[in-house]
Length: 286
Ligand code: PRT
Ligand code: ZN
Image 1 (spheres, rainbow, N blue to C red):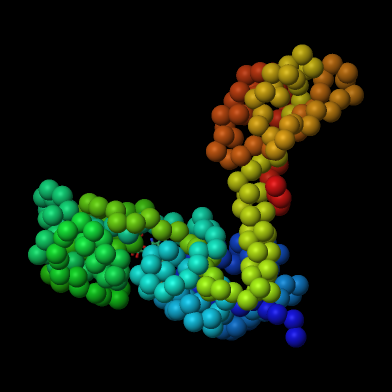
Image 2: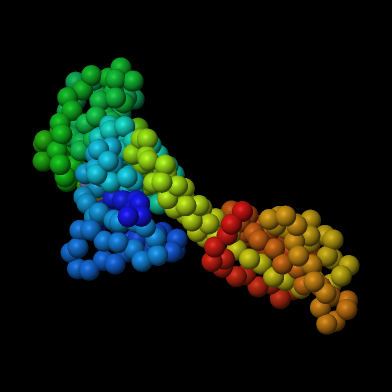
């Protein structure tokens, strides 16, 4: 039988939608029926297991799944030996210490002797050790942010993204211990056939993510402006320049990354570009 690679994805929650979208764009659509825990994909030898995110690091470390998608926070907290095959750029957040809003906070030494509620005791213990802090770490499974308000702890250590949960609970972020995003993890020492499938997956993910962060640009320019405009455009190699029916004008095509997009468009207009068209790129292979 042909080798299949088995991937563990979050069944539901913050990483599920982005994971499914990424694999769909990479040409892998899972046949998920209602409540199914295992599914396969037509056209790629892959099988998916839908799990709680807490169980993904161990499932991959033990080889029950070969690869998985999980937050770095969860991966480091659980401490299993797995490889990070690729950072995925979604599910971004940070793990921070927060204190009651009105609390004076001189610096991290304030935490000495304090009771801190968290769902990430291992990461917090390591962070306090590195900073020479001795505190009472109180592990709770959920609703960490209400702990100070009900007198269960002096402070919290939790995931922060926009910060609005902290504000709603009258807490103030005072220190960031780590930044996290979703990562594709892999079992250490994957069999060669599975390693090959993983590499094909990474190749496709690269093509999708590079395409999503770039735009295809077409514009018209008078011939005497072409040289200036070509200097502004970065392009994969160099821009394509084509003659138009009006022989005094040319059409220029190029690729611009999202980071420099607005800056480049402004310069193009200032240098006489007209009829600028911006087109999304479906896949991009460098
Ligand atoms: O059921 P299961 O165990 O699978 O899911 P879960 O409830 O444990 O996790 P889930 O789906 O909430 O989060 C999965 C992963 O998403 C986390 O492990 C992080 O890697 C990542 N992530 C990104 C977040 C957030 N952003 C986030 N904002 N996880 C949780 N939050 C919570 C946080 O706990 C806090 O309650 O959102 C609140 C803070 O958000 P802001 O925007 O108010 O600051
Ligand atoms: Zn969880």
